[in-house]
Length: 53
Image (cartoon, rainbow, N blue to C red; front, side, top):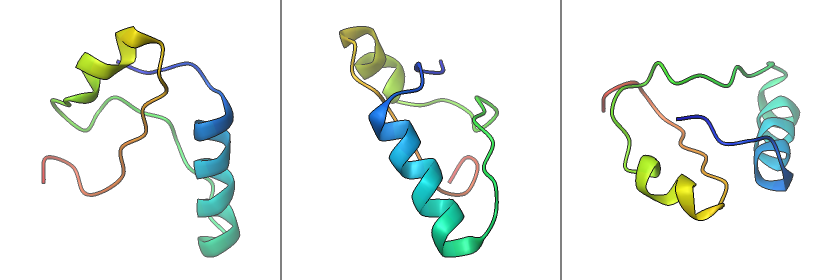
């Protein structure tokens, strides 16, 4: 799943850019996520960290 861009996604992307000077990529390549149960409620979901950790 990939939730729509919004305030949470924008804030996360901006914070990562501000701290690391790197651009981020929104991706579903990280494996299975419990966020798939949250996203249908209309909430934004952001998960950070190593793949399949």
